[in-house]
Image (cartoon, rainbow, N blue to C red; front, side, top):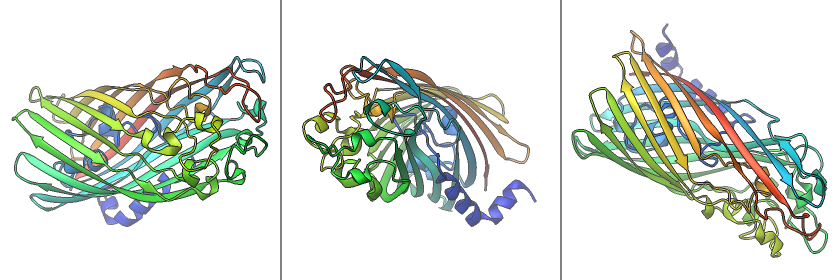
Amino acid sequence: MTLEEFILNKPLSLLAGAIAALVVPGVTHATDGYFSHGYGAKSQGIVGVGIAFPQDALAAATNPAGTVLVGDRVDLGMTWFVPRRGAEIVGNGFGPDAGYEGNGKENFFIPDLGFIYSLSPTLAVGVAVYGNGGMNTEYHDNPFQRFGSLGTAGVDLSQLFVTPSLAYKINEQNAIGVAVNFAYQRFQATGLSAFATTAPPGPFSVDPGHFTNQGYDSATGWGIRIGWTGQVTPDLTLGATYASKTRMSQFDHYQGLFADGGSFDIPANYGVGATYRATNALTLAADVKRIEYSDIDAVGNPLAKLLAGQPFGSSNGPGFGWRDVTVFKVGASYDYSDQLTLRAGFSYGSQPIPDDQTFLNILAPGVIQKHLSVGGTWTTSSGGEWSLAYTHGFKETVNGAGSIPPGFPPAGFGGGDANVYLSEDIFAISYGWKL
């Protein structure tokens, strides 16, 4: 029995296995803020470009219009994600300058799965299962110990998307698609008791008993993604996509931490893309993507709300202070031969974390702005496609500027600054075939 025959004979068990693997502890992927930079090895090889350049059955994760453009196929993949993150505290009244590593867990493995089937020459359905993003830090040497916190400090946020899609080819040049993003996310926080005080002039939290060390909690929700691609000339294709805010149920175990009683929705995001066929072998592609982090209170609201008397967990309460992110991606795909395709890409994103918001972001230092990717696909004699990709997220450091509140607990944290950094290496492999 071939690999294709084995998988086709067991589609339900494979889907269940992929979903189960995606939600095990530690599945996390932080690149474009805390979103993944690409879905599947082919997309990652060109740094996530895909709005006008669908390549496999995970196309709907970026633009559901691609579901009707890549043909009937199955793709299975795995991403090995290796982040290096940490922080330092300088000029603080509670202790000497010190550095901290948040690498208690170093390796993360993230599977993905895609399937597309044509109902007619102009109509196709599909499903994509993938890790959308997340963030993980684990500081065995707790940066907040000087303020009264105990034990290992960190957060672990994981996000799984199951995205069924439907796409229609309007004519030979244009296609539209719609997908439902069913989302599951899981979260835990540890070692943050210094922020859960009830002493005057607090409390710092509306519910200190549901702020930290409450184990894992989960939330579910759904949203919509729509998309279009259009071939405007024989060589130029354009695309556009929009994903609504994914409204999630609340993290009840952390209703004293996240604004609005534990709310942590997944932000809306949208983008445009272009693909240009420079030669029969060379394709150039580019995307511009926008992620609206600031629209999520728990993510976008600044810590300054806390010092103004608005505690964690309250309506429109304090958060991590993230700004919206715009990401520019460019890449190339070159058909070296009938069997071998080579890819490369570069992306640059705006900085989500302001320099006055680094203190709380010791827990979530999603500061990387530049990624470089390379990859390729080898097509076997039987038609199977083996794809590899490597992405490097260049180390980025955001130095704080007035980021630690002055004064002394319970009114402040001794002033000074927190500096945060992150770098990443990402390896992806996939196997796919046409049905």
